[in-house]
Amino acid sequence: MKTSDYYTASEDLARRACLIGKRYKTADGRYILSTKDLMNIRFSAEEYVNGIDVVQVTEQEAQALIQANGYKLD
Image (cartoon, rainbow, N blue to C red; front, top):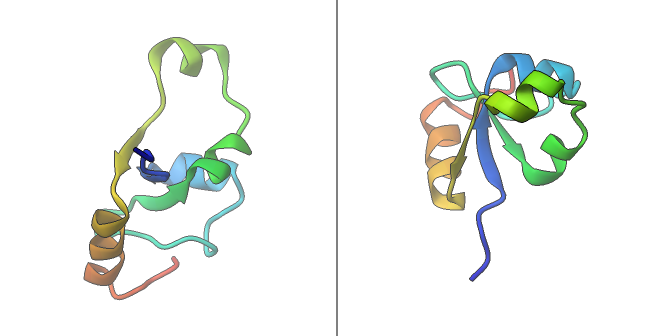
């Protein structure tokens, strides 16, 4: 079974990946990112220990979140 490669991430992570205005934003101010997007972010040691602010979602959930916010990029 293939795992989801969609995530909602904080604005900070989207900014660090230089993806503001390039990825869809949800109504609550988070961004829809892919596994590949997350791989391009350099994480601090603290983030490796404590985790990062991302939530894995299915493709259908990601589409619903994008649609609910009117397909806005920023």
